[in-house]
Image (cartoon, rainbow, N blue to C red; front, side):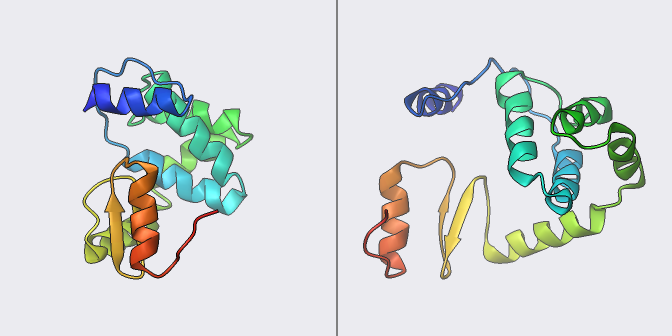
Length: 139
């Protein structure tokens, strides 16, 4: 799986580091909700992706997440407090419940009109999904 993912990343010109561990990303998901509210969704998601997949940082650690949050302009003290309070726990719980109800079993998952593509898939899989839901050409 690691080789396959690394090859897919290289094919797209994306960096991919030597990860040796998988970490619980729950706090990172909660931080991402705050990032959404703060208007830094894309920058934060990119920074979290880089921290995990390129730099092999442990996204289960609050200090790592505070550092990542600060790199995208979020206040470090506020980030720490939000995670300590678990301020966005209920929102992430609701996201997980919705995903379970939709049958999501992995990430990424792309859902359209009740059909899904699960996991890192080739472009043709996305074309197939769009075809299933009646979109005939992706641009």
